[in-house]
Length: 159
Image (tube, rainbow, N blue to C red; front, top):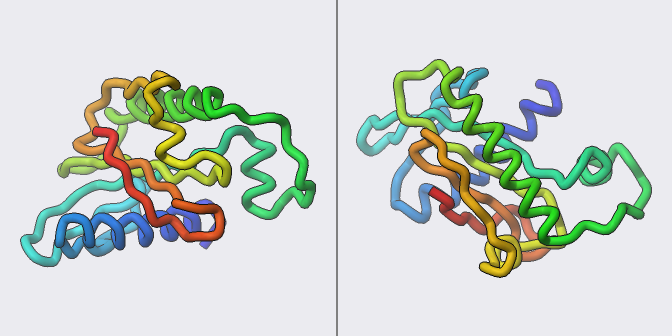
């Protein structure tokens, strides 16, 4: 299993734990796929969803640092406004790719934010003017941490 797949599987596990708890469902991994990344099945009613996972890094330098490939602890200044623009760009890119997905089930998008500085409260502060781009995804979820020391424990529905 390569690093990309390991990160996607880890994100799916965190997401399903939070999602199942929130909605009293029991979605489990059915298949690893390419487009979307996974199909999951609800063991209670048989519903199937496609799940596309996307990781949010401010830039390549932050990705390398967060994944342990760059040992420096210095990074350029990252503003919350810049981070919101990165999130919007990723959402637009994923919306454009939607029609290339190969599954006959509703598809949800899960965004896992690695940034240790900004939490959901900051990112979605009305003063930052976050704009959710239109997309065909059934649901869009933003997954973050309530503190840098915690695992992903906060789920915010964007659509």
